[in-house]
Image 1 (tube, rainbow, N blue to C red):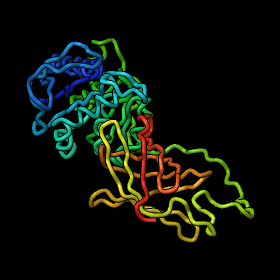
Image 2 (image 1 turned 45 degrees about the vertical axis):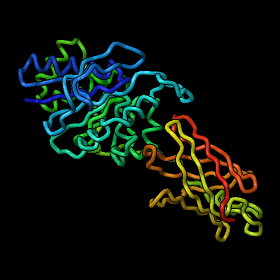
Image 3 (image 1 turned 90 degrees about the horizontal axis):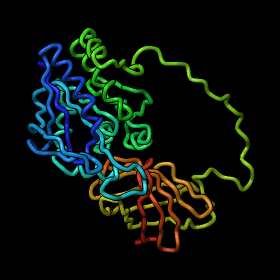
Image 4 (image 1 turned 135 degrees about the vertical axis):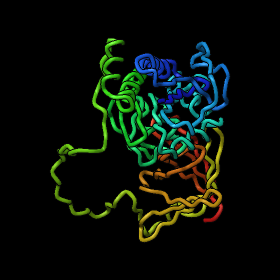
Length: 342
């Protein structure tokens, strides 16, 4: 018996769950060897959909020990990166990760007898908790930059298969993900029969990291130009002048899910910028630091409140700094700091 559990959480996208449900239900009708149900992290309840849509009933709690297939939908809502209202997709996804769902997803990703699949923004739920780091995946095209910022390897394809991880792109890709999984688990005859029943043929090629890699055309290397007097790489500063950003700083990043604090220490050695960040016992290094026209920029990989690669841009005013931190299409977070040690 192939067990298929389709996850519901508050704000889920209807098409993300209904498409796969219909495909697997058709496979059940054609084989008698499929069990498909809606589940939630909380168990049996009515789960409200996105944009104040009607609720769907969850028949029970997610049970990863049953193996089979776990389908994770995205959220249905607004996509304006500056919208922090209750119908904002980033807000709905973050709220879902504040429930017991995150524990279930972590356990699911550890199992070899369970295929974890996602539709549209469902892969972002996994990625925002760091569960897709170094894994090939796809999401809705508007979220691909964010997906990459979490450490995943974004692939622009309709369906991406990375072992027991199968992810789908836009909203309607749920049909293609489910049909692929039916073929993978039950065979091509059943998948083909479902396609005929629905009068729908799968779109696109299922991408896998196998076979011959396409030849990539690259620009011809240009000869390096000699550095002119007064010029320097962007990560360098004039060594004859004290760098205005050197020292130890208390940094506060105001995110939509709360504030978190870091201690930043920046030094300039032989004109090159370097820096570290401490949050509790965790120590990280800034990458790609640069000082240009009074603005200090760098990148930093953080784990809280979610796994993201943030790009910072700040301006220093004496012993204070202000600026923003940005990750893909997510809203920019305000950054403020005060120097505690010169």
